[in-house]
Image (cartoon, rainbow over all chains, first blue to last red; front, top):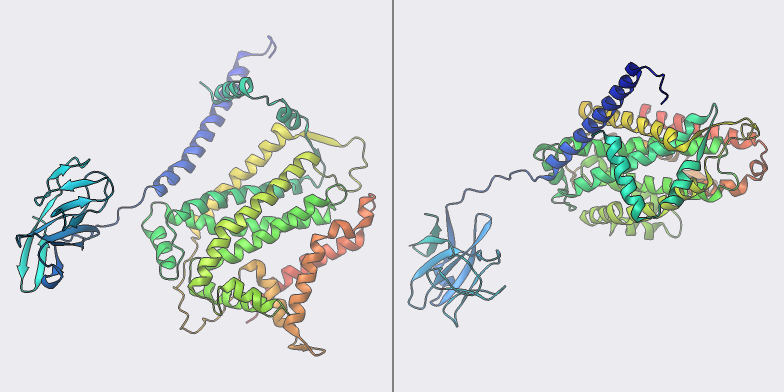
Length: 149
Length: 360
């Protein structure tokens, strides 16, 4: 730039530069915004299941458990050694593994990190931080029905 | 702070850590000749840009697409109706694919007619033609992925034609279809070709192609190149900025096309329903398809179809080896015969494509 150049011309160049930069950034935003919105998965309406036939009585002898589908999540229903029916969410509160009933230990166990829950779903030993969510169990005829309260 | 400030700042940060002088040397010394045919220099860059659009939108589609006969069609329906901007991403992918092939055609023919393939750029040409074939492969395999009726039957016909090739035909057909018929197995295969095999090969050949272009610079047409006062412009930033401007315009056109003429999904493929009328391959295959229709069933005891396929195979091979066949242009002599061949090919492709769309 030489000294004799008028200050207006300088500012015009400056203005055009800014305009170009602004346009470029706007274009970039117009490309990135749809991409980000696309990447975020849309909400798939969750099946509003509140009651489900979890098992047949014959599938559930004393001192056993069964994993069933509760909507799109697993649940566990068990018949204790005393013959009592219990149902819980089968998702371990530690890191989302699916728990199972251990008939030798007579309580619920998560194989991933050796987490133990008692028959009330309470976390007793191992890493799980919280108890399992408990569901209601009804027996209607031969069906074992589980419902969310 | 203006943008240029940050660019300079990060460039100097990088400079302090990595020696970029070699790269700088190449970029600042490269020039592009300016003459009446300069417009054709932009075709390759445009094809490259559209390929880049394909990569980005393709990766995005991969987030939701499911490659199975049971779920493919539904997953695209999901993309187009549920996913935010899914209609846009999918339509841009389809439009950009077609425009990319179109610009690849323009690039190929302009390089052919300007004889830019001549020594020392033979390998640039060979890698370019291979990239062109790969682009056609992308088109053919991608066409089936929505698993709609038109694509299903077009793929049936397309793979059947491949099956007519003597000796290896049956093997090729079975290999492409993943069995006797076009089925879910075909879809899975085509998906694999489309997102793994072809991208890998394309990356390899594209790297070679671009390195060669950078290394050898732009070819000057015969006649123009003998002018000692040939005008040139720097590649960086002048030519690149012009390229960039073209790309911005192309992106605008793409978004316009995708919004105003969204790519249709059609009806879901059903192997047990009759083929709908007007089954056609993608437009860039129509001229071959139409040629096969025109060839009589028997030409001197040879199956007409086989003859046509063989002819196209031979022509494809010849295309690959053009720089080695054209000895004259390597010595900076004009080769009007090859120009005539190129023009004839253009007219032939245009005429038969048109016939394919106009004739019932």
